[in-house]
Amino acid sequence: MSMTKDILIAPSILSADFAKLGEEVRAIDQAGCDWVHVDVMDGHFVPNITIGPGVVAAIRPHTRKVLDVHLMIAPADPFIEAFAQAGSDIVTVHAEAGPHLDRSLQLIRALGKKAGVSLTPQTPESAIAYVLDRVDLILVMTVNPGFGGQAFIPAMVDKIARVRALIGSRPIHLEVDGGVAPDTAGTCAKAGADVLVAGSAVFKSGKYQENIAAIRAAAARG
Image (cartoon, rainbow, N blue to C red; front, top):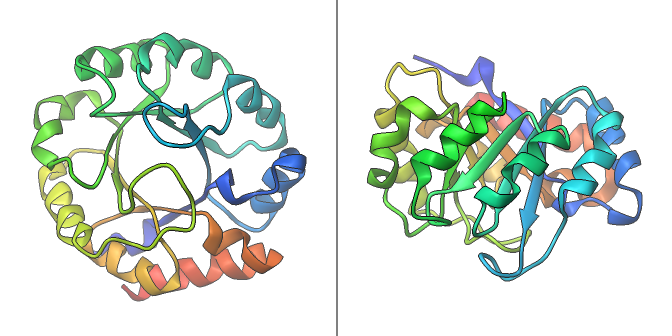
C-alpha cells in the first residue's frame, strides 16, 4: 500500500525569520505547504525557548492551512487550552512531558482540536500503545528536540516503521520531524510517514517553493 500520494509537507517556522513571521507564514502557504508546523519550546523540557500562544494567535490570520502546534513543554496541560484558543488545529504533546498522557489527549479533543503525541528518540513506541484511540497524529522525533538544523538519526527509520505497524488501519497521521530534507524524505515515506516536518530544508536560500517541491518529490520516490 503506497501512502506517497498523501504525503503532507509541514514547514517548521522554527527556521523562519522571527522578525516577520506573518510574512513567512504567507510565503510558505503560497509556496505550496500543506500544514504549518509550530515548534513551542519552554527552556525546561527542551534546551531552547521559542514562542507562546500569543504568537500562534498572531500568525493564525495569515493562513487557512492547518496549524500543527508541537508543544515541547512540561507540564503541558496548563497551556493546552491557551494554544487551542490561539487557533491551533492540531495540538501535540510529548509522551515524556507528564505522567497522565491519556488525560492530556482527552483534554485536547475536548477543546475540539486534533490530538497528537510525540516521541523523542529514546522513547519506545510502546509508550503510546494504550492511547491509540485518543490520538489523531503520532510524531516521531528523528533528532533530539530543542534546535533546528540537526542531523537525522538513522536508527529512527525502524521506529517509524514500527509506529506505522502499531497504527494499523487507524486513521492516525504519522509525522516525522528532524533532519528531514530531500535526502531523508524518501526513507521516511518508505518507512510509513505521511507528514514530513522540515525547517532548514524549506527555509534555506529563500527558495521555499522549490525546496517544498524537492522534499515532496523525494518522498514520492520513496
